Image (cartoon, rainbow, N blue to C red; front, side, top):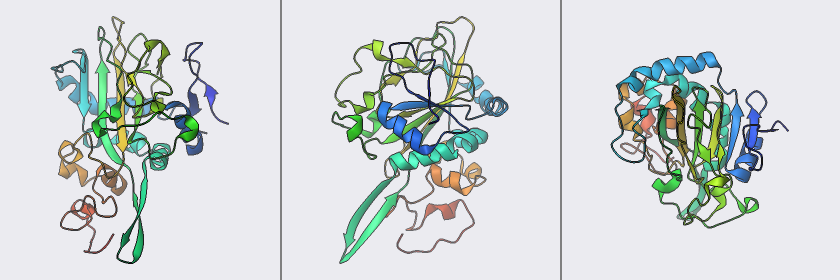
Length: 309
């Protein structure tokens, strides 16, 4: 077993899985997510790569302005549309084999249907749902606890971990630390097990939260049905910088409009697996076509003919 008890979780809290990227398996990660809703992968990205990712997004962070509303503190700066703006992050984190495989296991949808007297089986693979960088400066207030599956209008009954089956959640998040993240500078607080609760129930007692403290290059995986939120940055000189993204089911509408967020001339330069992850693909049997064809032909020099999927 490669999991270790995470020493950042305070005594008396639920212990959530912490895995080393060099030895973790998809089986272990899926099991941990089903049990608690979230888990850590330590050292997924080395610090040199983290620094390079930050260099790619820094001009966009510098250009951002305060959010007009309640959801984000005014001290927060954001960047979205990361496949085009942060290709290194897209390659090393979003396309990391562990995240890709865990997403497939938890978010792939398989169905059967009859066409005349022929029974067909269709498989819809996950797609990229949203991408963000959050740089949260000193003095930022805490964010309200919320579930990120609210955009897909989920209505889930209360179950046990033993009753959990892939298909319950609509999305899976990955949060990568781009700076040292502590409780004091605003670590994401998270309620383990809240993915098993009734969707109509509120988060309840904040004493149940654990804090996703991480070193640069660590990541935190979380099911979208879990209650979570950024904490207050109570420091005077630290900015908490976090890359956060979600994959969702292939037939759902994406939270971030990937087709407008990523310029088509940049998309054409991307590897095919990234293009398809963004949404230039068909969710079988027939969701997402252009002129009755797989849209990959609009960003790659491939011939796609009319025909059944």
